[in-house]
Length: 264
Image (cartoon, rainbow, N blue to C red; front, side, top):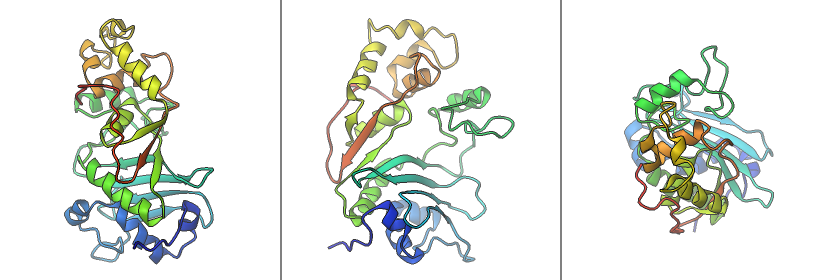
């Protein structure tokens, strides 16, 4: 039986670091640990830390950054986690980067000010380069195609905290569509996702807006998850992508698909 060393993010923040490490190590898929040489102590061969922990004892939020190299600017994996009002675990943001891939500065303006991944401000030139490189909105680097292993590992972490489900906040359309494929269900936003599929389908009002007026609004965008997500990010809806919350039961697949036959 798995030992429960904390039941919440607040409890995890209050633990001694060695106990936190034992729990957090479950988050990293074994394949990534092996590929990047990440050990249980989250240090490199010279004893330098590969982990950044931003969370005070008793606080209900934490930001966890795991690096492949001590000197790396961007984390290999990043998690922003919080306790919900009823003490469930809520993933506010999760990122997996390929550290060997090119970086696109969609997260910051030319003057260095943050864009919050394009949510509040947009570095259009960086976004164009990211789009042409095959990335989705908000991605600063290519991913590692490790989401399946990451979900399995995160569920191991959730189990260590004594939970059988957790919540996620998809920031973009493509996040929600991909989460569906890995077994997530909707707490809220399913009808909106279904309506977006209708609006991007034959006879839908969004098709006429895919008029090529910007790089992100090409007619073929309606046929793919990534294309739709860029068009939405580009403001085609006239409103931001918000109000979607999903959840995953450990070891279960919800079987929900709002974009049937949609390709990446």
